[in-house]
Length: 91
Image (cartoon, rainbow, N blue to C red):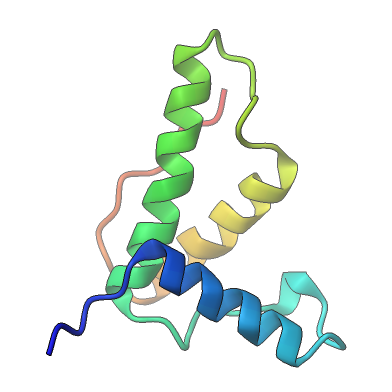
């Protein structure tokens, strides 16, 4: 059986976990329940959006402050897990 999950499934899992405990602030959410590969994919998704924005003239059309904060939380999780990743270069 294929154990890989699509990014849509990962996002659905995150949304479901967020909905299950609305008392927790979104800043306090962790990614510890996700696999290493899932955390990497979420981070890479934001990095690709930032690159697309840069290609469209350096105006952030796809990402904003919420995505930047999420990327920072993902980056902290990746560093904690000692995973290699390409950092996002914010302009």
